[in-house]
Image 1 (cartoon, one colour):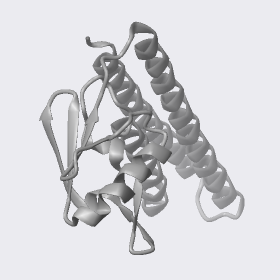
Image 2 (cartoon, helix red, strand yellow):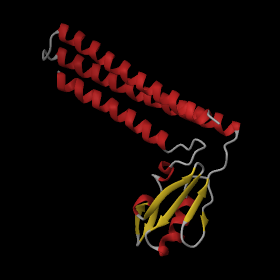
Image 3 (cartoon, one colour):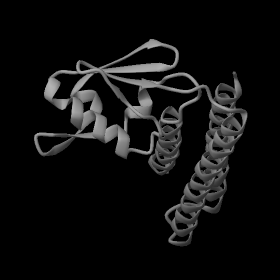
Length: 184
């Protein structure tokens, strides 16, 4: 029974971690190297994460500099950024690539905060689905006489507490990211 609870708790934790990874990729006015996490560069025929082909630094609040290990990769990195959904035009000076993030408009901030809330809601739905699956499993166990009715009640109560904690963490993550986006 304990291992069942742990299994579902781990699934909820993965859902939360997935949400936090998605939030790391949302740019909030400041340059954040995590916006490049999903971008792959064609490196000798194989798609390679941009972090593995160069040094990424943030010299100023709204600038990311990508210094490739090999100069020949400049064009490939530039192309990968242009074809991504980043929405920023890379500046190639022959030695490195600069990404200059424009100041976000009020409308863009509101749009992003709505997106953050939507992603948070999706994570909550996923967590509730995990709870439902857990409770179904416990009911089947009780039906097959693997656990007693009291153990079923105890398991569903514990599952609800785990769910409440996970949803609280999602709410906190949503609030933090929304504050970050709306801060000018």
